[in-house]
Image (cartoon, rainbow, N blue to C red):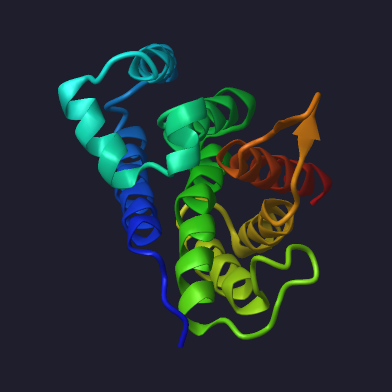
Length: 198
């Protein structure tokens, strides 16, 4: 059995908890896309400000949940891109597909990382830092949870294609796109296109 880095484990659990809170706020219409946009703008501002000064509560979370590399580039990067990805799917797709896409984002990446690090043995052909067991677990669990919002004929391909894209490194103008942005967009696009065909 492999060990998972303590900071990474805390990051992944935090990712899931924040995501669950967000999905419940969306299900019960306690937050709107406009409010999410405002949160995103404030988050970007706080992130950039955090590069210059220590903000008490924000510094605590960054010190406990942020990767060292991201602390120097864009603190809170994963949260910022996760919020941006969620906002985009809410504006681009019907609510049930958007919620399924956000659910795939919430569970696929963190669970594939945790399960893959602990139980994984077979290296992925898409990314040698990851393994097949992690990809499969992320795909299975996130597709099952996405079925709360969409039928299985949408949830399964949405989660599968999202997990395939999660393994790829996508760069635009030498800027690496964060998988928290890619996963919900790919899942939502896949489910939306399949729904149009069926």
